[in-house]
Image 1 (tube, rainbow, N blue to C red):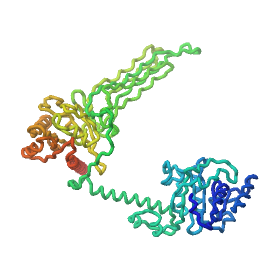
Image 2 (image 1 turned 180 degrees about the vertical axis):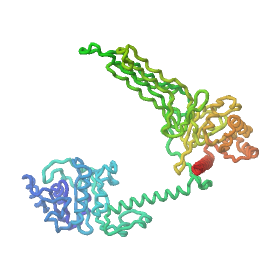
Image 3 (image 1 turned 90 degrees about the horizontal axis):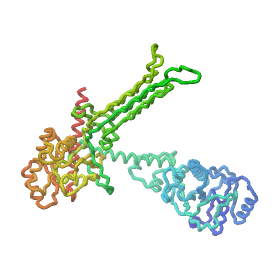
Image 4 (image 1 turned 30 degrees about the horizontal axis):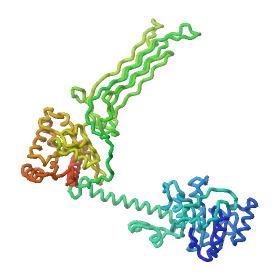
Length: 620
């Protein structure tokens, strides 16, 4: 608290903690100000308090007792008095009051101070560093972990002018002993003094002067005479959120997926976060053969009651519990089959016990699979298509529990000595296959640069090396756009000649390509006769599934930065009557144009699907 803030002949009202020592410390500077110290107690509580009051009066300080900071006008001595400065010192953090009570105290104080302040006067509130919740508090507090002094002052139409250090060196004698003579833990060091100014009723003149606000907000802000600064601040916050939302909706409308001109295509986002340096590489598993076995049922029990009061108690063997099922459930929580183990055994049921105790049924084992998973038997026959969230397929049923000897009791056989074994669970094998793996699949010969391209456009980290067949399993990467759309791109293993005859990775690779909505053919421009690479790729796909060549496709000429690449590109353009996008995945050349073209293909396919759905709904 700077001493220069006090003007000559100022009338100063002191509230809060340690008024005795603070009044003495302030009066030592001969500032020629009138100081009024207050105390909440109506009478001195001990001899020390009486002595302190006499010392203050000796220093020219007026003392008022029975003053409530939350209702200053209720005190007869203060009812008709006005002050230039009202100082409220409360710099201790060990208060037992809750945050909501502290905020309520400050709110009532500012409402009360409004009536006792001269025009142009200031209210000074000193709090511990971190209590106020303002921009200078260190460490910064969460919104709900401070006194919210700025918000509480708005209830009394006070505006925060500035926040400055308490300057405890100016008040070296300011101690933790007040009129009540109680010790309290004060933190004068690094305490902050909040200086407030009375702003009056909010209007456009003082609104622009006291708050940084956009003209667009002022144009939509309607003010009334009955509004407080708290209500105006809340209204400004709501208007700012509405304007931001409105601008976003307008921007999103003009970047809609239905406007497919290149100028209106969403912009791919640049990666800002550094890639992980760990060696853990996650590949995408879209097909897996699994074996599942249901749990065995519990055995029944053969026993007879044996009690001292019953010589022939009769049979009391309970039945065994049923074994658990193995169930496949479609879920949007999982994205591939990486977590599915090759063998899954359900739990067995518990056996029956004597005294007619039945065994507990085993819990079912539920394996979550991605939505769109196809379940086949080993002969390739489709058993079920889990295409909706929550769909289930019982893959292996658990065995039934065996009956105990109590079950076999009859009129002819009152003491059966037989029981049943529990049934064995089913043991079956399936092939799980995901229908759709990615929006876009990268297809090319070995060493064409597919993995390098995926690393360049996404955060995926497939292995890159200067030898063929580096990629043996598909890897998936996500391309992000500024309209919050995400496109999945798959790096598929390299394709070679006669793959449809199961050469190389053969049929397994071609099945990966079948699960991509669009295909990107990658040609290596550094090789001789690059157009032959496209012929091989299209021929192999045609032999495996003719419909694959009907899917949306794009021709990418990679390694444009290498020697002879420019010459090969010209020859390729002459021989092939298709649009070609020349890029360098390693150097990052022309990748932005490639990502825009991918987005155009994605939006076109999305529009086709929606039109098909609409036509199907209209037909019903």
